[in-house]
Length: 433
Image (cartoon, rainbow, N blue to C red; front, side, top):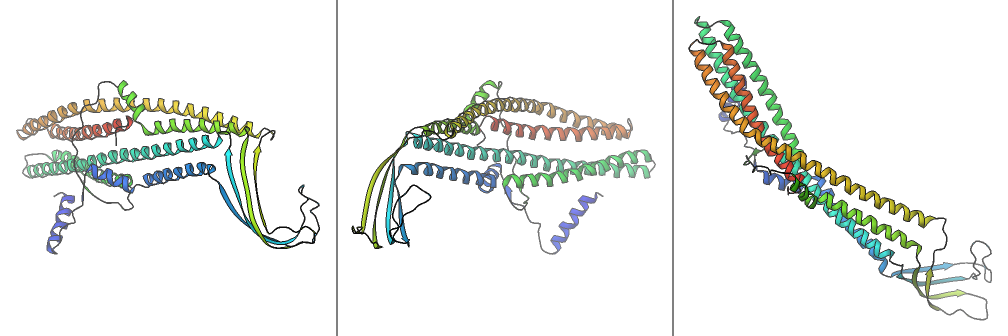
């Protein structure tokens, strides 16, 4: 008797004796898996947080348009009538005093630098939004691939179990015939070897299921591995006959490509902002306050209130080439962004062509593998009949069984390979959403 099947039967009988039934794993469709992954996956959440952080950079750059208001509270102790004699070029007198006031500063113009910085940060935020979308699509692709891989692994276990059962039956039949001197022990040995190979296949298939569920758990963004009853998905339609239109579609739909283009525009706007550093900046400054206490020994008393306003024009003249270097560095980085866009476009075009070729190949394998399965099934029926009639040896029968098993594996592989390759094609064209 088959030991794995016997063990499963023992567990089921024990559960029935104690009034328990094995826990039924929850069902999971591909759509449910995609929704769960978008909700839980840490990469999606990190990309979303980065996008929200990039929106704050726009507010930071735009803050230069608004006035700044600062409060000051100052107290000092000094020897009256003394003056500062070292340090800055100031001749203000020193007094014992206590005062408080406010300082208002308002940018009038910085020759367009703030405008370019705001535009650059806004483009970066839009690029971050597209990066968030691209991360979602990456996760969806991994969910699709792992989902179909798990379905394939489970189907292989089913094939392996059926193979073990069929070969166990053959071993039992041949052994019974050998005991009655109707078959030789050589037939029993050949059948037993095939049974052992089928059991090895089952063990490997079961291990493949565990590995597939581990990958699916990672794709779903879950902390603990969970076993699901996966629903089978219908085969997608046939792939397009040409990849040229799909490449053009990918150039329009791929979010990472659109995001990189926005980053390039942002780099050029930042280059303009760095160029504006060499232009004048005009600022309005106003101060006002109250001095409740001052100790002074002059004949002209200091009033207890003060206020003043000024307009300051700052014109850069020379700073050791700092602004020139910053402008040149920004220009080179913008040109580098051009090359990154070009490189990604070439990579996207290659990915689309490769994914299209894979999907076409996998689609053609569907009919061939189905024909192979039909022929292998027919060959096994004929070999079984010939063996039962004594017209062939056990080698012919076991070879037919092996061919059928391989045909079943190829048929399953063709089905799920096409589903995985079609998902990759949808991703490459930016349509897997």
